[in-house]
Amino acid sequence: MLACASPQSVEPPAGGEPRIERSTPPRSELVRNLLGLARQALEDGDLDRAEQRFRRVRNLDPGAVEARAGLAEVALRRGNVPAARLEIQGALAAGASGEAVNVDLALVHAEIEERAGRFEEARRILYRALRSDPRRYDVAGRLESATGRAPQAGEVEGDRRLERAVAYPFDPRALIEGAHAARASGSEAQSKRWLSEAVWLADIDREASRDAFRELGSDDSEWAGRRWVPVHVYADETVRSEVGWKNRLRLQWRGISVALDPLLHTAFVPVSFGGFESGGEKTLAAIDVSFRATAGRLPAHGLVAAFTEIAPPRKRGDWKLGQAGFFGRDLLVRLEPGAVESRVLAHEILHIYGGVHIADALGSLMNPGGQSLELDPANVAVARISQGRRFGPGGIAVNVLPHVDTARLAATYLRWLDLNLGIRKRGMENAWLEARTSRYVAAAAGEKAARLDPHMADVASFTGYLLWREGESEAAANLYGLASRLYGRGTSRGRAMQENADRIRVQSP
Image 1: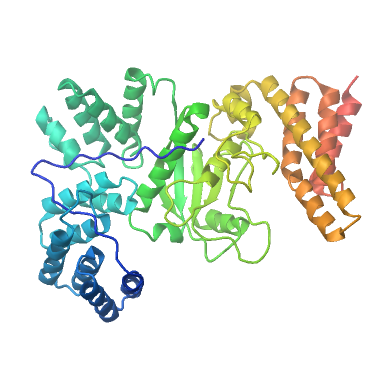
Image 2 (image 1 turned 90 degrees about the horizontal axis):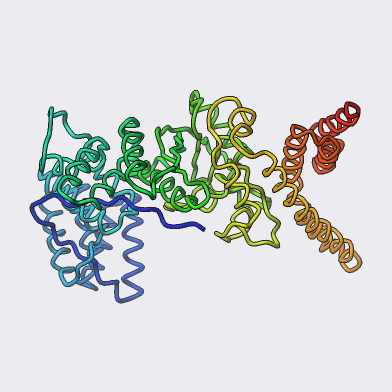
């Protein structure tokens, strides 16, 4: 179900490309360990220890490009650009046998050129490195900082528009102008590529992104009918600590849009980036409180998505990796360190579109504790029914119900409840049988069988509301009664559901 993100494509500027080659892997365990220790010392700011270890690696393995790159970085941190250049030249010579780019080496090389004032050369190095590995968001971040927005230059024509698109790959308006010039010169593929890149830079220029999106929709059958959903992205201190974090999150949303396109036919486009402070909290509930306290006023339109890299608490418990409101418009996701794709993000987006949990016995993206990237038939049906929902103020009554076939949605949820209640019942029966041999095994089995109850209660309640709107009073009352039992009759929500059921029965003829 999940596909790789369509990476940002960049073309190198004219004037040739620097040769930066992939290094040969270290040939011994000692070298590997020394490189790890040297990198750790560099991260800790212990330049003397880092230099000592990198030099030892270079002596043991003259072909270890990583050692020379490390020595170049040490020299840079000491402000010795000539020494850094000497080491990088040695690294380039050591890796001259291959054709692939060593991206880590390229980052150091680009910084050396920038320090020497050779900015065009630095940009060429970064271009080629990003082409070699488009998922390296740190390289993208460096390149974005190095290029920025194109200067306003009045009317630009012909080849000059192509040059500006190459020189300013993070300026969506320059990319659109380059796309028009490419089409005029007969290069449809390049035109489409630049228009597509412009779409995903809405945080830089939202109007240009929308223009590119509309143009693709009118000229390209793959984009025709696709929806443009704005996403307001918030990152906590753990995510923002990395170079290129915005590009990382752009890749996340681009990849999810590709993965879910067969179902939702929607581009989830980041239109703004903001920060918040998690404040050392560990649970998602506490992180969510910190997010709402520190992020400022949230936008009234579009998806609101918050991200953290804080791992769940180590102590035992059913810790969540993500959360999203059922048919809501906000979500919170834990990211794996360095990851540019997320199963959790896909799972939570489907909740936003009415997706429902699936019991552990069934492999599905909507099984919260599983690993499957496939989607079960019930959630496929729900996603297709609800793909036209909106993301503005007013809640479900405004954003969902006027834009979906409520009868089909209710029927789908009824089938899902039937299936999962049956699985739950069988799990409870098995727990009862196992109680004869071990009350501990029985307790674990019973807990597992009941795990979906709060989510099932939400779905039962919502389906009851849909049926009540359709005039099916008896079925609606039964579902509210079911929701009451699943929430727990003694809880406030359980009592409210029972009151709904009783009220409907009294009012029904």
